[in-house]
Length: 384
Image 1 (cartoon, helix red, strand yellow):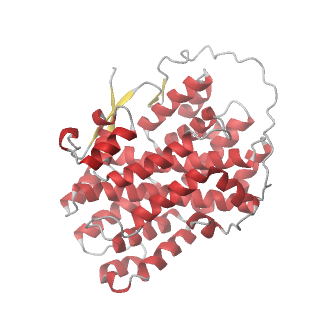
Image 2: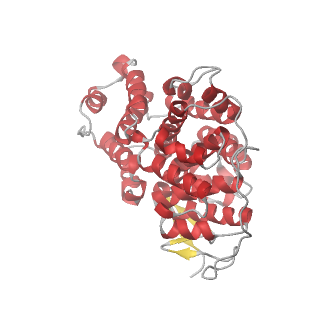
Image 3: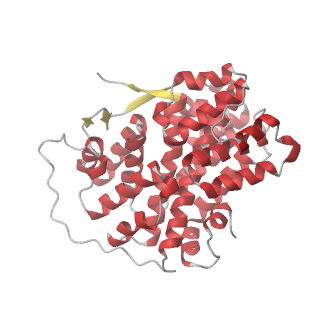
């Protein structure tokens, strides 16, 4: 079965990249389910399907992923009279304002988050409900923006894989024997906080800028989603604000788990390298802290995390790490020009096609995660 990513990337059923992609069938299914929910007509929302499609097209345009822009533009135009003159002006006049306070607040949010999520702030978020969107629909908009960021980058990466060419059966990566690891004397031991250049591996808290749900008065559906999302979801602002859109949170959690915890392929530690590289590039201190810490727990070292915090452009302790980091940064910063030239170093470093796909999944996913963390709340330090 093909889906939107397969179709827009030009993958042929049975071809090597198609076959590799569908080795991660849970990711493919979860990605399509998120799209169907966020951009279909299933949700009961005052943020109309027409508005969501036009905003998705605009985000894809700003991101430079023209094939995705054309897809959502075409779907929006197919809705006919549901596309109001104001929405039509967004499609016809790239970058223009509409004069409608509600739409223009959303457009500002979309255009800022498309490429520079750290440049948005609490005021930009609160301008959206102030302009007439409900809190639930404000969360829906944030999830939509996060998803389109993920989808645009995944599409760019998968298309690059197809252009690079592959093999139906990916061979195991060849990893050269390494010298025994010696912990750098200038770094704290793994497990102790690493603090460099405004980033840290210590455990942080996070505070939502929107009113969160009260777990005691949540609907049965919201209660269920909180219970299956995270053991501490009922006490964490992140989940309590996202549970305003329980169906979306549930589908996103399916995608997250399928990407980060699937067996085989890229090692768990190297997926955390990609996640941290993206978070460092996007300026997401919270996500960088979580995934630097997870890398330390898995790899029993923190040298590459220190390098990422200092200067991601030169980070990596070996060819594999350097290739993973550079591809993650390119996909994050310039998805519109991402191509096979960005993947060749991964193959040269010995990564199999499945490992390359896992790296793309992880990097694209944190385009979504970072945008939620950066633009729905703020990290809090629990220690001085």
